[in-house]
Length: 128
Image 1 (cartoon, rainbow, N blue to C red):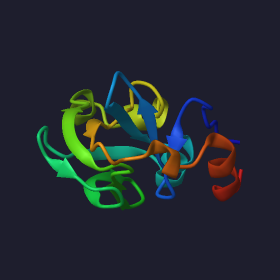
Image 2: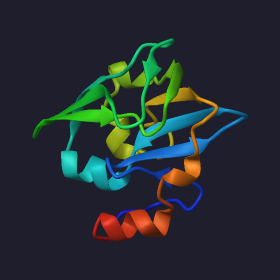
Image 3: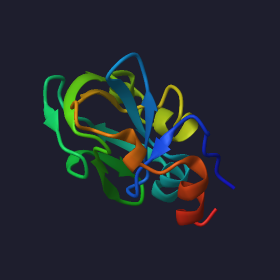
Image 4: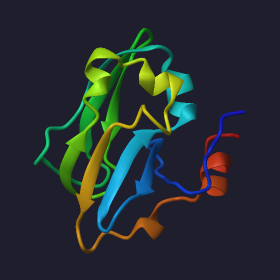
């Protein structure tokens, strides 16, 4: 069964959010999503400075099986992207909650992380 760390918040689109310092959060995909995609061979991420809106597509993950959109679970401005993934996209599969993170967002003041799911709720939705 996939792992869903308790300290994260989760979206219905299988992204996770880790609160950072202040209003910046880190975003990635869940172990469930990584397993469903299979071996990730290419990652397309938003650009630093790009505005993102909760629920909107802002990147793509290409695997040996398919291409899947990455949806931002929060609204705000992209402040960092994981450039390691450009040369090592398989890191998303190997460590989805650590080195396989995708991007960071300075969230808008009206964004409420409590609107996202906790680990137990997400596990139920994902069938785990």
